[in-house]
Length: 262
Image (cartoon, rainbow, N blue to C red; front, top):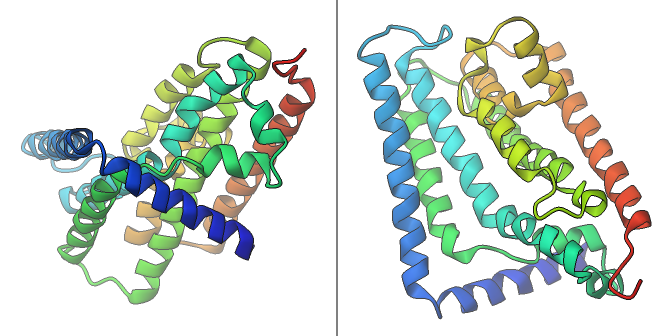
């Protein structure tokens, strides 16, 4: 574990050094995400000018949800996004060979080698918005509830990475340009709205089969409402099952990988 932490620290240092060489791109990404945050906040503000509740949630609750969504998105863009973008290209060019022979777990290396330093400032900004949204919430919230919220948000960020990888890994067999990444991206958009607005089979799907509701709607529900043991077990089960499916797909994909020399 210590060896992997040292390796990841080297990834981060290298990424910051590289980002400082392209400062226009650095500040462009900051401005782009600030605009994205502003658009979403404006959308919910205008929406609540005409309605009182959205899926049973008040404006203050939806504001916490939006801030949580910004945070999870910033984690994805900073830690995982670049790596998942390049994986299909590495597979199609046969460049995965170079990572299979390294004395480190291949999934770890391919998932975390590119730390997006030019998105790190956006992560700090998203954290600031999240702290502000939680602090301004009118009802008193215990420290334990906040800790639960943060823990579930981080679990949701991991789950988002896992689900995205599940849609990308088929590139090993399809040999397409992106695998099923575009399909996954469109499905993940269900997570950009509170899960309470969905009913029936759609809610069951986004809560279990394609559990994007856990990113970040369900963590917000746990923070704003009364979580029960069954709910927490459901969260743990969904994350564990999704991770197991991703690992199974990953190992099957490596077995079928033909490499550049085949």
